[in-house]
Image (tube, rainbow, N blue to C red):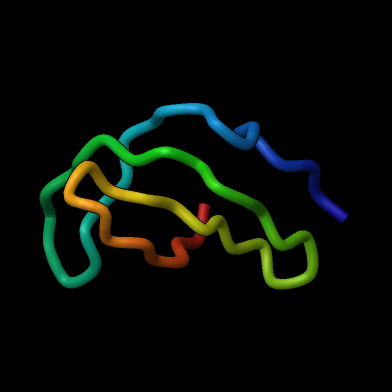
Length: 51
């Protein structure tokens, strides 16, 4: 199983789904089974993103 690259609380850049634009996001959690990160954008939107 691959290890995670980002830690909870870390601020990174994530692509907005359906767009080519990247925005700052805070890593909230990581699901090792699905390999999805739950992230929060500056506007408060929370989404799950694949690495």
